[in-house]
Length: 392
Image (tube, rainbow, N blue to C red; front, side, top):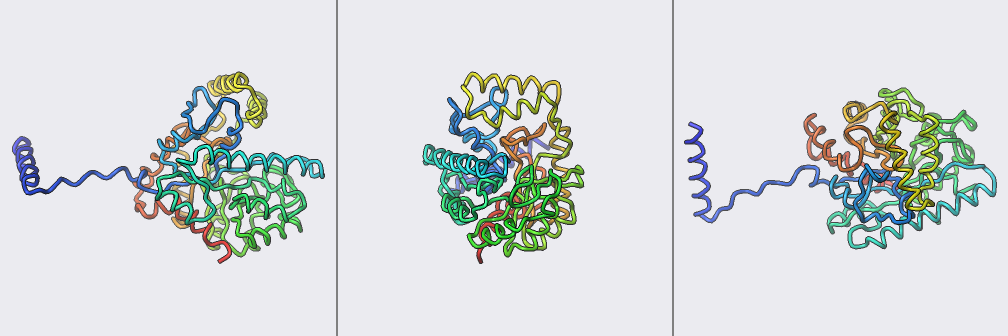
């Protein structure tokens, strides 16, 4: 019977060909047909490394970067928000000046990366820019600011960074600053400072999306109350998956959704971070990898990978990530979930070590019963909706 069925199929195909009909071409995989964005890419810390090029393919075994143009193609990551990250320092005029110089330099490095690779990647300022770049076959580079500490007490500097292309910014990082309380510090302001409330108003005026990742619960609550426009959490995990103050609880996710915002699911703090003295030392060096010689960079990578063999940084894996993801979608809804894994900033888990693994996420979402349209909303539609909603 099987042989007869094969012969019949061959006869029908031959008849179609004789009639001038062609068999329907197979569609490419779903993941590659969608616009895929990530809201938090820490890769700019690599842009000033000696001997390192974003256009080259790098291997996790010999390099700490999780993101480059060839691997963006592998994982069909079409782009996202490249972060101007500034480590929290002293709340003094000297501290503010050093932070501002650092942030300006990192912004310029993002611009240089785009200029050096202008044939394959372009700068985006609006949701329409992102869609047009994608239609043109180019990768998408938005800019974000992780920690507004470089602004010091001068909110007029937000205009400068807006003009430089920043379209997403958070008030605070891992310690309290002049704007707000951090999720991982003792309360100082009990949310936003008076200057932080002015920061929210100026962000709204300019049309920069507010990023509440790293904010304390009280800071989040006040941002949500004060902002005229929807906000994002660019790289956060669920507190129900792991009880950590850096993560968002389900009640606040529901409130975020009610206000039209979205939470971009991260791979970090799904367990306690194994920040042993050895790992802390390497992390401190990693923050300054751009200042190292190629030989020192290679030695840092070697030490990091050796440490990985004896002590994993996170006690979670891809299965845990997808379980959290599906719960977040159940709580927040498909219109209020997006992705921000914290690539090159501490993110990545066993089974989802770099961006080449992204198609696996789409496959699991499809297997869970989500439609193609809903999955694309989560990969980019919700992000671009929030970007477009500013100042409307």
